[in-house]
Amino acid sequence: ENRIAPWSPDDYRHNTGTGEDNAAAHLRSLTVGHEVIVPVTRGKLDFGP
Image (cartoon, rainbow, N blue to C red; front, top):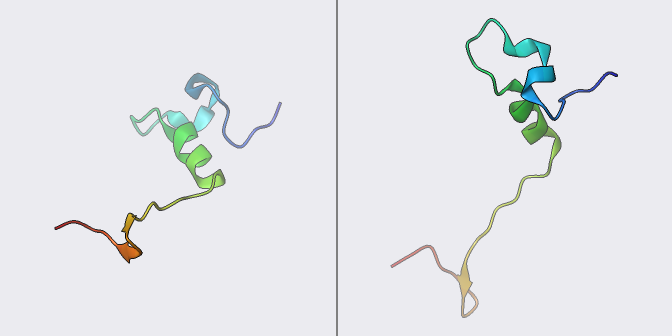
């Protein structure tokens, strides 16, 4: 079964050699939408005091 980013990090062969084991999570993050939450108070941007 070919997958871009398998659910289990153990199933992802490119984890070896770099010392990191989260390559599948990085690839999954590229395939989902990004969102930004901007606070608005009384019709104006509210970034703090």
